[in-house]
Length: 312
Image (tube, rainbow, N blue to C red; front, side):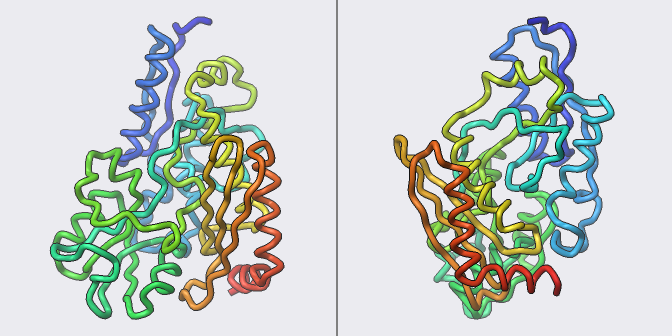
């Protein structure tokens, strides 16, 4: 296969997005020596609007659309995404052609000095997050906490905490901190029993056009089958629920040999009600298991909860 034509990667301009794009570029160069790769930085609507929560401005898909437009208009060949930001329904002309091995999927509590656990936060501590999923589970564990909206890139969020002005702790993804060399900032990795991760958290996915056979073939050496399996289960769960950024939904799948276990959650934003369930089965049935778990939660009350949130 010719590697003379440059492969162009559309990426957001944040430090984490550029790290992820650079990481994919390095893996591609290793798999295809001599391949020329160019980065195409794109500013998305999600990056431009920083004064409101994601739920208020339309959800995490705002980080994705402009990257897909760049591919559709042939200004780029691929886009590198954090899969937790990718909506359940990918447009018909695109596909997630490869997913990398998953990093730590858990959420991280990053707290002020002297705090070692979630339980150590003082009464009515102020915790920053822009995620309704995290908010709901924090409230369920600590109803006394005061949740503050926190937007911006990782550095911006850490600076706000470090200023000491208005936050006692923040929640971030472990994977993002580790990729930026900031693992030392993690106070504690939250047990999924306390804070179930977002669908796809810790997974880097690479999107391209369905019709772009050359690019799809170039990406194949980067595919991690185990990650694809757990991601398929989680995304099938979210798709059946019709989940969006306005819906506190969480799912985390794990693979043990040929067996897959999937935990799912739908929550009231104020943490007053958490609907949880788990399912196990063959790894070859990942999609079916995700849908079945969603059906069980819908029957347990999630259908009414989600409908109310959609029409609120």
